[in-house]
Length: 201
Ligand SMILES: Cc1cc2nc3c(=O)[nH]c(=O)nc-3n(C[C@H](O)[C@H](O)[C@H](O)COP(=O)(O)O)c2cc1C
Image (cartoon, rainbow, N blue to C red; front, side, top):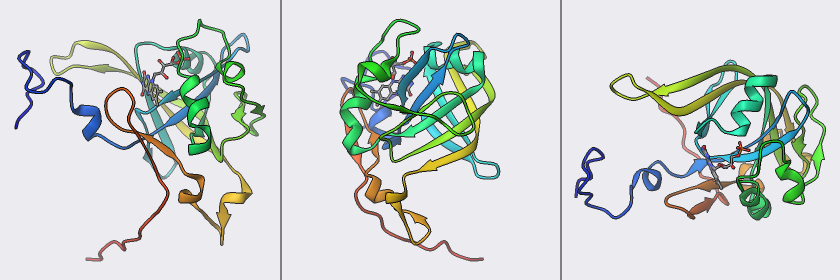
């Protein structure tokens, strides 16, 4: 079959995009407003985009509170959403009024970050402390501005729970990161890894 995204007479009942661009890591973003209000929300349009230096991005469909806070205070933290924290992570996606702290609502304790003001989620296995580098408003193919806003940040500090460090390496599978898949409610969880060596010339 072929699904033409420009066609109104859809050949599938739901857009397959998110089921194909999957699994997507979840940036569970803590941010803080200029007034000092803390905010926490999951973003699965999230990824690392550069290694030297470490840069990450998350993309907001609409100008959501996390983007507003990062624009104001230029810092954020990407907490790792693990299997154990999946319900709490989901709870923090509730559309609460601006200034209401989703951490409290989800029963999560904050822990102070080392280098930035927004706290990390204390129970998260790891967290990336970031400083804003850029906010880009997305455009369509005709150049028309879209209500999509991508926040880029440089990772300046990395918290890792010592329980997940083995022989100097982070044991990703032991942290059981959850990732977003398709439609409204599909997720996956990483519980095992395999290794492949990259070819040389
Ligand atoms: C697993 C998950 C992933 C999500 N990913 C995104 C995303 O990439 N972009 C987005 O705009 N909203 C995403 N959402 C919805 C936001 O979390 C939700 O709109 C939230 O209220 C935004 O919070 P904020 O306004 O406090 O930033 C996601 C929700 C869940 C549960």
